[in-house]
Length: 209
Image (cartoon, rainbow, N blue to C red):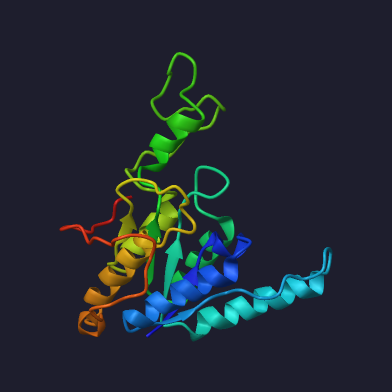
C-alpha cells in the first residue's frame, strides 16, 4: 500500500533525512512511503514551481492513501500546502489519515495565542475580531471532517515534543493505527527503526479533533 507523506517537513534543512526516516518506518509497517521532495527551484523560477506542483500531484495520484502531518506550522493550524493535499486526495476518493505532534484543539490554541475579545461578547470571538470554530476539532472542520469521512483517526501526541517536526513518535503511532485498520498489523516487525522515542498506541485512537 502506497502512502503519500504530506507535511511541512519538506521545509526543514534536513528534510531528506527526515523523509528517509519516515519511509523506513513506513516499510517497517508494510507500507511504501511516497515523500514529496524535489530540488528547490531557483528564486523566482515559476517553471520550477510548476514542475514541483505537477510532480506532487502525480505522487498523490499514485498513492493508495494519504497520511498528513497537520502539526501546527507557522501559526494555529497545519501547513497550507498539506491542507491542499488533504483536500486533493479526499476529492480523488482516497483514504486520508492525519496526525499532529502538538496536542489540543484549534479553539484552545486560538485562546492561548490570540486571546478572547475584550468583554467576551461571544465565547468564540477572539481579540483579533474573528470567530474561531468551536466544533471540538484539532483543526479546521474541513480537515477534520475529511479524515472522519474516511473512518480513519486523527492521532495526536499526549504532549508536544521538543522538536515536533523531527520527532516521529506520533507519525509511527499513526502508521500502527493505519496498519491495524487495513489488516496489515501482522507485517509489523519486532524491531523497527527508531522514531525518536518509544511509541505507544493509546487504548482508544478516535478523532481527537
